Length: 415
Image (tube, rainbow, N blue to C red; front, side, top):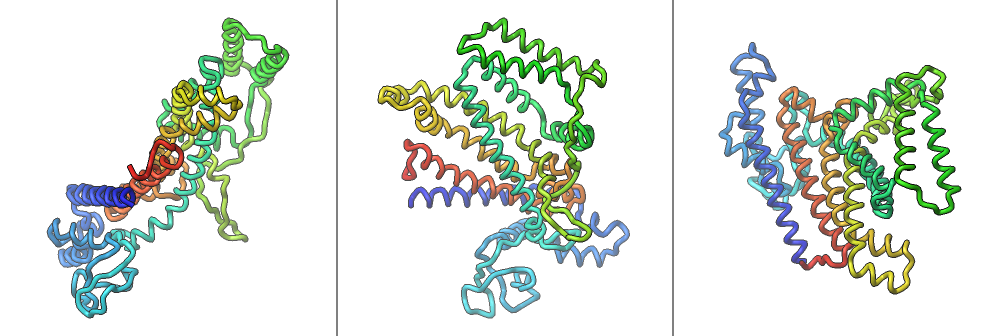
């Protein structure tokens, strides 16, 4: 109980800090959003009316208090006087009164994120329209990254300093080195433009790979020398490089991806109407997977190698447990703490919208919504998006702390 109260207090304090920083950061920026909205030729009367409607005519401190009041699930409003700034308008707020009163009253309501400067739609409604696309994309990407990354990291740890270990490290290093916007452009170019109709694949490197596998299967447990491995790897790279100079005879013509460069979670058919089109998720999902996958591979490998040196692993082996049980149950489970930390951070980052990725692929999500709002200086939408992202980080961090206690018996909720 004390742990729950402590984490709740921590979360509320962090959320208050996020709201405060976001409010003053965006409200102290130079420029008049009303003039940007109505133009330079609008009359002063029109400008003042809009400023009053948006509460921009109030002092900064008073606007901050009103903003906190709107965000809080328990807030103070006037029940009947519509001339009051804090009048509880049923068309704006969704909630119920806690006390029977016609004057000032306490209300339990849904947090209110103001209205867009340009569309005059509620920011909460705008964000709720695009959040499902971002959540689905983030959840699928991080789950696949976790599954594939754990397997790759496990293989690398079990073959420490071997060929598979070095291969996994090279692949993960390349994945971490690529910025998201650059990787997004590469994936979009090859997946939706260059390889959309057909894929030209060189056949000789795959022939060498098949010969490699055949020789390994027939080696009957004999160890290959490092010189032989380097010779095969060098020959494989050389045959790949030959693709830049070879003619059409060198390539196999395979069916293309058939994917569009842009698209969202839903598409519209002329006769069938709106439907889920999950193939549009493939390219942005691959882009979002690359960096967290690389981090998970390296963390799993290093953490598992460290855990496998502990005394309880030797004890488990001394009891006669199978190596598979020792590695998966006793080793991997105790090596998951840093992996969970990385996954939680990356998942919250993906929920942040992956602005460039969603922009490149035209994915209807939080990132694209915020990018458009930043371009048009639609401050309520930008502030609402940043607050949602901040709240996501706080909630995920609390859930991860609880997950630690379930995975690692050395962690206790009472601590």
